[in-house]
Length: 234
View 1: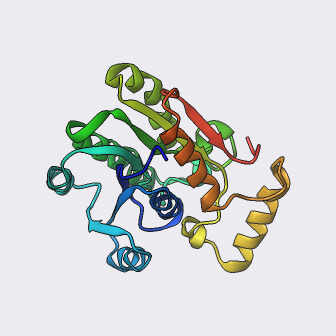
View 2: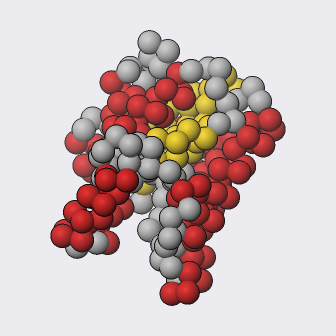
View 3: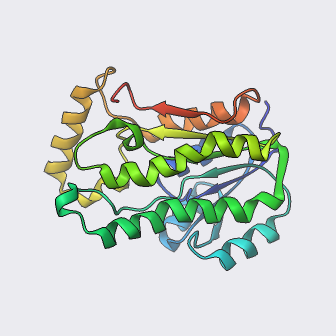
């Protein structure tokens, strides 16, 4: 049990893939704290037996205060995300794209920077990006820019931060609240369409991504890699 009693922070772990990872890692015996901005979501995570902290990952002071209060950390998962930046480029508001970078790219880097002084050099960092970075799907140029910017940093950071390991999981279409901007019928049609394009014949579930996160955390011989977990969609 390589994660037994290890101290793990799941930033943005109050819902979706982050929450699934937090639950799975806690079941492996790790000591988990999830962070997020939404008090209601954090309360739900608390009801699952997880420790929580209300932290705004776009606020550097909030992050620095949180990590300084935590002390030494063995592993960090950064599942912070935003909902903006999607759409065909000729219709895409560049202000929305800027907000998308603020909500994910910058929020993840702020989190990473604030956590670095407290991370065990024998531990790991796992970013959650998206298959939009490499999938070349119409309507995702903005998302590709946001997630591709994170992914291109991973192998360079692995060299700079060694022996501390850093990797990323790049999810495909996963059934989470991120898709709630679509109506029920449209979301079902969208999921069915993407499922038909995958090699495994279905869209993903949060636990699929949680398993990939756990694998990267436990395997101490992997660093600098972006692992696609997309059912073969891309």
